[in-house]
Image 1: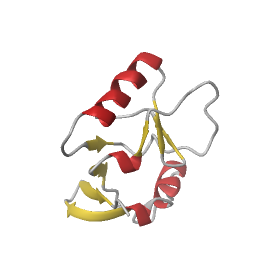
Image 2: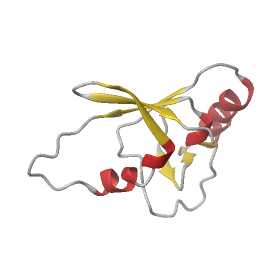
Image 3: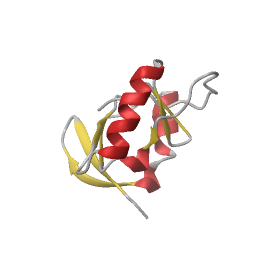
Image 4: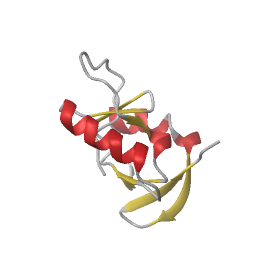
Length: 105
């Protein structure tokens, strides 16, 4: 599954209907859940009128691109993503993506 925004660990999408569907999947379906992100979803700006449908902790794994920052300045969304590092444990690190296990405690 994907999402539009991540703010304070909570997940948001623009469409209320999509939020209902994704929230229902997280709530009712058993098994492992995987969230695919580009890191552009991470924000520190308020999202007026939007309601969260879930949180990062609702997922078993998060898949994000792996960036090589050699002599490059990190983008704002990368810096915000780094705030969540204590929530994740690297599971698989590939040359262009990383699969992170979500810590439940």
